[in-house]
Image 1 (cartoon, rainbow, N blue to C red):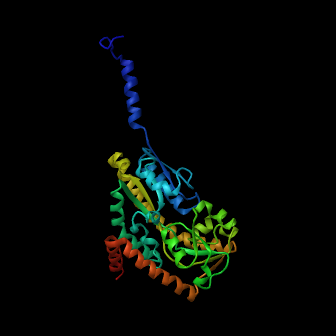
Image 2: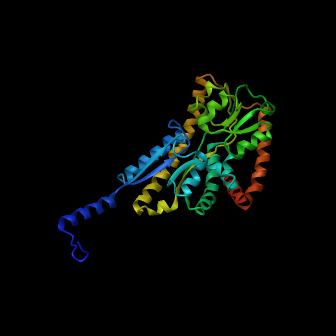
Length: 330
């Protein structure tokens, strides 16, 4: 059949139009990696976020959450979103501190130790962090804090000297620095590897939340938790701006509304998780304690050092954040 003699029959035209209609109405599918397990409240929250988006868009945007680092490792999530390998992902914000110190503002010891202060600090830093991400083709959707960070060990802590020479799990530059300043030995360990790291003697102490201890069944590999409330680090959910911009206006609006709800819900979940996780630790035999005066004095001294170091590293952006935070507290 020559090109000139070709004619589309009514049946062929109907099939073609049906195929085009099916293609146009096909749902957009997004894979969303997170480093944390299904039981972690952060994962529960982003799963609800995905459900909310699916419902609000009548299934036109379908987000599948891949938990526990099963799709992409924690260290690669941000760059995977940036490179278009996945359109959306969740990670702990302070992992990006080596790129820009502004990302670890929530991990400076004793800068913000309560939920109210942590929210004030987030409002003071959100715009600057968003702008930095925008420069990389990324959009910040929302951020949710972990419970206040404490110290897990196999022996009780009476002073900062008790941490000296212990191998301490580090998950960001702040936890690495606090280990150095207390004389401990920082060791990089991701959440899924914590039980094995303790069981094999790779680490002997860690700074993390009551939630992480409860999720990883800390009572199976250690015996003490000091509720030092050092800082409240945050996870953030980011999306590729190019992928986001491909969505129609109604879908984009649905994503933003679901994100705002997820942020509000996540902060409330975090507050409740602190109470619940502390109870779970105690119920399973973990000795939960508050810092002694000697330990508190040592840790606050470390905090003052780290605050000064952070301000120096973060430069003008850091000063803007800190000034806005302090002004909001007045």
